Image 1 (tube, helix red, strand yellow):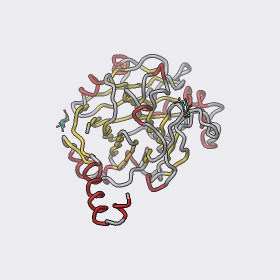
Image 2 (tube, rainbow, N blue to C red):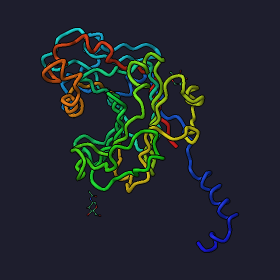
Image 3 (cartoon, rainbow, N blue to C red):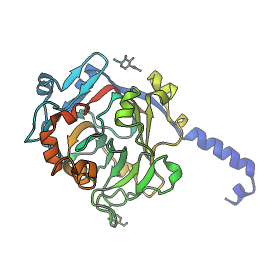
Image 4 (cartoon, helix red, strand yellow):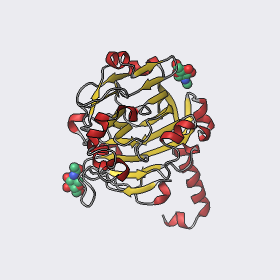
Length: 321
Ligand SMILES: *[C@@H]1O[C@H](CO)[C@@H](O)[C@H](O)[C@H]1NC(C)=O
Ligand SMILES: *[C@@H]1O[C@H](CO)[C@@H](O)[C@H](O)[C@H]1NC(C)=O
């Protein structure tokens, strides 16, 4: 150490080494698009683990009810927006067949569910259900703002330093039972603006979400179509995340063994209603509470409110270092 302090050139050498050692280059391993998305994923029909007011449909039911549309290049995942739904609104939840450890996950969309009272659309990954949250959860919940969060067992925290994220760091303890945080909050970062979400996001042709999961942390970027970096736009066989700048959410720098807390994750894309998240937020939103007595009432009785609650997915690509 003494040696280092007296030798600035050595410092320089070290920081060059650092740059070359931080491997941010990735190679495509899974390229799900159009029909291949459906072969890589299961349609969950079991009850919603987040307790939503929802009925998840099988692939054949979703197709016959017009909620699933597949072309050679896109997959549209909708919800029932024509029928009253006293037992929960029909929707789709895709769960990847493969499990992942670390990697870069790129979701390219032309449409995401618009922000509507009672909806809770998410793109996320999580460890085995029966052990939750032992193997962790990484969530991007797109309403009413992008709320990005990690959910773990005890002993995983992130830095509260704003320089790691463009978004606002709301909570820093990823433990779902952390003292001083709302139960189940985990560590959370909120997107800096609502403009690249829902209606404006869709009007601009959608965009791309990127989630990078490494041994040292998790970063999430989000770009509206016009701002998608060139390399990402080209959708190539390799990507370099070091070119992308500060992420919207950087879950970094605290005290967390990411390899222990995040294990064997399944990728999930779903739209649910009310339940643990949207149901809990209902009472705090005057615009929503003015519409109905409860979240479930609103979702059951206002099918046309959910006409824009669909995902149109161009591709989901997974890259590994
Ligand atoms: C968390 O850390 C404490 C203190 O080191 C330890 O006693 C406890 O077993 C840990 N809990 C988990 C779930 O790792
Ligand atoms: C990914 O799959 C799509 C659709 O099958 C294809 O057009 C595209 O070239 C693939 N991308 C790469 C990098 O292989």
